[in-house]
Image (cartoon, rainbow, N blue to C red):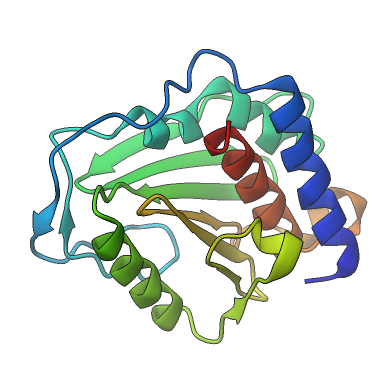
Length: 198
């Protein structure tokens, strides 16, 4: 990732921390511990190998990625005047929000693990499935386990939840400001992490 993309993502996350994420994010809820289950595959462009089972529905932490704040962040990152609400799906334990933009889809997923060790296992499996993936370090990682791929996938692990942003299907010719797909994915992920850190 280029140096300017780190600045873009950090600025975006800091702006979210300053302005807040509104009342739609209620924080993590106390929910049952997940158990091992069959593997799921998500239609996100990422090869997702799960093995986790969450509760009957996604937590508010997961649902906020399809809320108005993140929709606004996606529109702002892509410099779009407006953007329709994302399309959400829940395939336990994976919550997926697809934003269909004029520049192509941006897919945000949260693997809603409630046990940190299971969440870490999922995150590690995802990283291996997306090889070659590069670990993010320092300020760019916000102190969290994180990685990116050159073609536009970014993932963070926080509180047992894996946040992944897939911008691999964006048209690079139409992305504003000479951003790469990885720049876009990182900026959106940074906004979500900013909300989760409130």
